[in-house]
Picture 1 (spheres, one colour):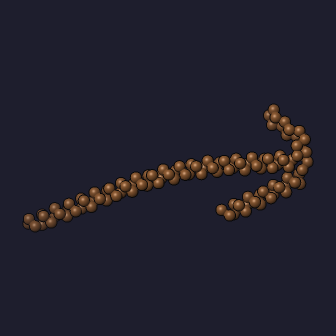
Picture 2 (cartoon, one colour):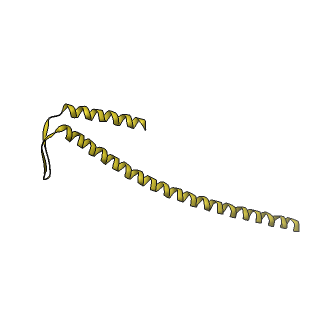
Picture 3 (cartoon, helix red, strand yellow):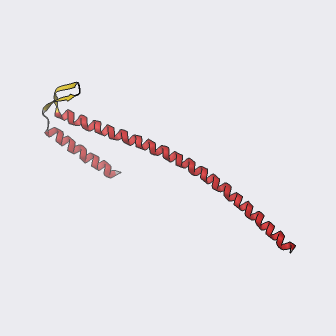
Length: 109
């Protein structure tokens, strides 16, 4: 986990250095939306922020799916453990009944 934090920090420093070295003014056009004379630093940081938010959102969605699956698996495990306990008791009853019948049969002979 710490390696990801270190890598994220190094990436952030790299983006910051890149942005500061490219501080010229640019024009941005996206479909019908247009920004004139905006600093490239703002564009770079904004893009990095949007990318980080998108990655975080995907991570949260994946985490929620994993939690849901874990909850289902825990429920399934509890059901199976209950079934195993029931079958174990049934087996023990059958074995004890079978042993009792064998003793009676041996005594009759």
